[in-house]
Image 1 (cartoon, helix red, strand yellow):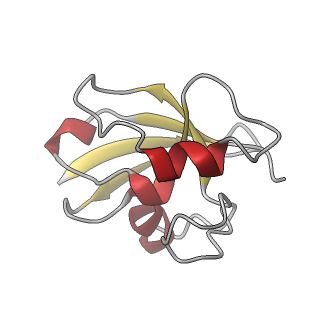
Image 2 (cartoon, one colour; image 1 turned 90 degrees about the vertical axis):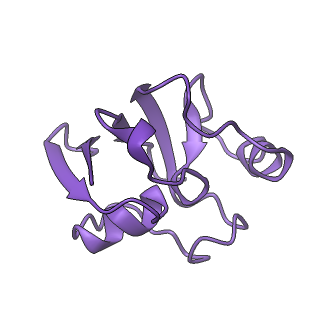
Length: 104
């Protein structure tokens, strides 16, 4: 299990406890976070699960070429931008804090 904090667009902060071996996008959906559209269902083809990693472990999965290409096509990319579907929830996610990016 990992505890992850999520900042919504309204600045409300939620804390979810989630099983490992899901993607962050799946964990957020299971927790009832509905601000994130995640239209492609985790295929890394739409960038609608864009989040900012505010605080995270150095061991967090690195951005791969496909994720980087998707992030290059969005308006609100900044340092810490990630696609939640590309972050596997593992023990290294304990204490992770993410903010849901503005909707494109």
